[in-house]
Length: 202
Image 1 (tube, rainbow, N blue to C red):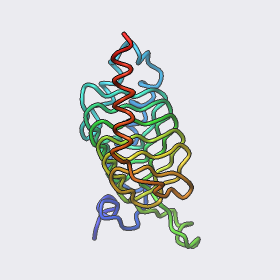
Image 2: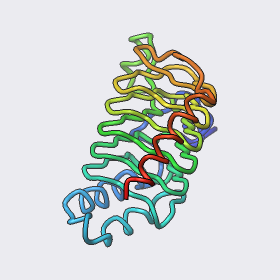
Image 3: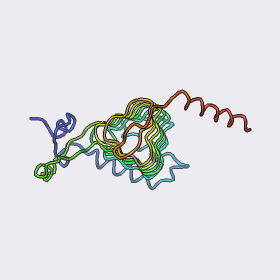
Image 4: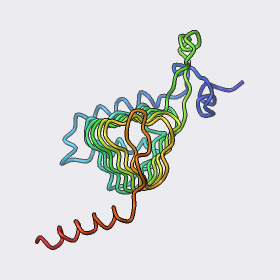
């Protein structure tokens, strides 16, 4: 028979209270220490928290408060930035590409619960991975649901509830989140012109 952890990893129903290991307790302690630290001038607590992540890089920026369930299922790419209030329920894998920027109060959920109440009331759940591509910007108060992939170079508008995959290089907004339009060459040209103005303002 499969263990509860094996069921969890396969995306099957499992009992979260019977999953083997103490990653939940370890994460709680390290998250608390980080959130109570002077993280803006002393990275000691952040670096201790980073030890539980699957991987991360030295240039990671997390702005407290931060919360995760386990940490061991989270992979951060290079040049990652999260504003205050990032919540990650990492019962399954959560993978961030490089150059991902998150606005305040982004929530990423891998855990889901049965629609049928008789099954849900047995305290069973399932978990599906979330993948955020590289060069992604996610606005404030966005919720990303289990099993979602956000494509490379895309922008998710603030307040969106993402329930389905978002393709590469597009702007997506709403509840439920839908593609508004593709990011075009004219967008790039406009922002390169603004960058030139910025560089020439000194």
